[in-house]
Length: 310
Image (tube, rainbow, N blue to C red; front, side, top):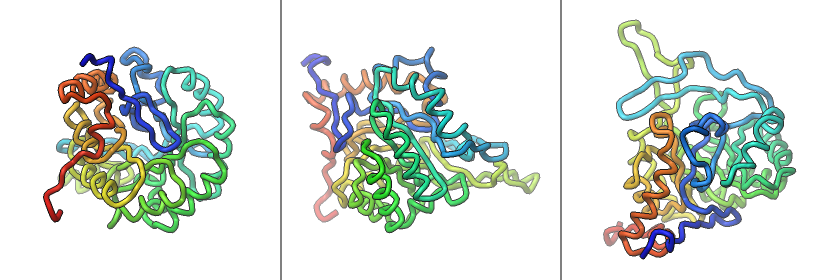
């Protein structure tokens, strides 16, 4: 079997991707910043930085701190607002030879629906990812921690926008499967699992928190086992396509998420120290599937074999 004979395409309800390797929002800028590091056409898709209706200055510095096997960030959705995103970035992004999925966040349901309706005027977008799970802004996780609110916000966006919708969910809940079920019933095309875990870092000598906003979101290899657990739980409980996120830094990580039930993955923190990783993973995925005598990536998605009774 040659690599070129392997079908890497995946279908997440209305969202079609040429391969399952995407880059995560907030870790890839608006793509221009990464031009010298990567061939964008190799990617399954790009999810640019979260945008809000109005410009946001973000949280006070320091905004990032490295931890054991991870990164705490408290950026606070720093961005120039939706209209600037449309005017300055959208044409460039949609001119790239890959799927572009806008990521949006808002203060309330009506505002999120208004933003989605505005983006609906740009059918060259492959979809919209709803950031209802940011732990670094006041109220940022409210939509994603309550099943009824999560259902209602996805339903409202679905009614306002014809583009495929992805709900990005927070792990900072008791039962992520119940949230996934709620957004699936509301019509989301897929769920992204997971956003960052809320944490903090402390300088005990100064008796002060290190982050300017005190708390931030933990990402990186430290959260991979927790993110995998979330993917397994949702894949077994809810009939909804999953995009896995959390500490993915090599091809074995990718394969673990796919076998667990994710139809695609997003590369996040690893892009900071290896900006070309996501494109390299596409080639490695082809090689790995060939070594497993697979003709399609679909053959290994959700193939995890659980012990009897588990």
